[in-house]
Image (cartoon, rainbow, N blue to C red; front, side):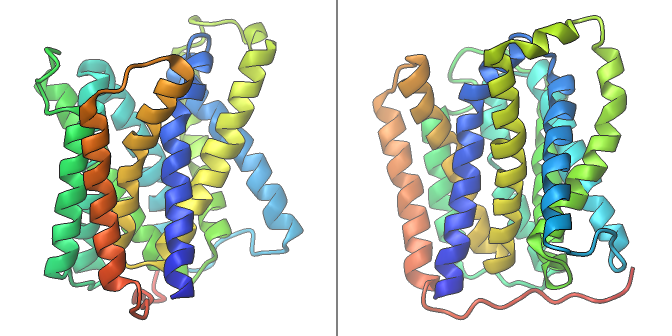
Length: 305
């Protein structure tokens, strides 16, 4: 029971932080190009997490499951983010919100063959209820009169697949490494991989703009809170809950993002927001009510590389 509510706390925290990142990143993105901002956020998080890892005297270099460790950084933190950016640019932010919320569905799908976790009818029903809630909150694709392209939508779908796969891999190696180690190594790999991207945007902004106080505060928040803390919390929660339960908490992201947009950016809330939020809460509550008292089993893994 303690493990269940601990996992629920960490996953809810991560999803809520990512939901609110839109409000903060709006200021930074007015000045810093998107891929450059991704690199900066990873760089800041890398230094912070490496410092904590050294302070706690945890293993700095992975000795087992190196292939899976690399996949976390490459698939989860690099490919997923890049695909999401490209997909949103070619399609729309609205479609990005809709399609990327399919990540929990792919998480559950990958967990069945990779972790041997069976999905019960109740778990499937809970995910369905929450997914309906997300569609109500952000709207059915095409209902807002926006033009989307097939190519953009395919990139968005790939981003959701990559995120679901990464989440399963993170849970898989949580029996070998701590959440701090998994997060640190994944972000370090992503930092190296995103570095070349900044050269494609070098003429789009001035480095001196980075030192404006609002930009500094936004970048620090994104790097420390939205990256280091949020990714650690997500990986920690994944290590504590079965995949079919863990994915449900991802659905809180659009709810928090919409709510904070209303609070700080004066965006309007419609009745569909409250109706959709109710569906999401009911889906999570139903899952918690059915599974909260059960023992949380750790995923099976092997020691091979």
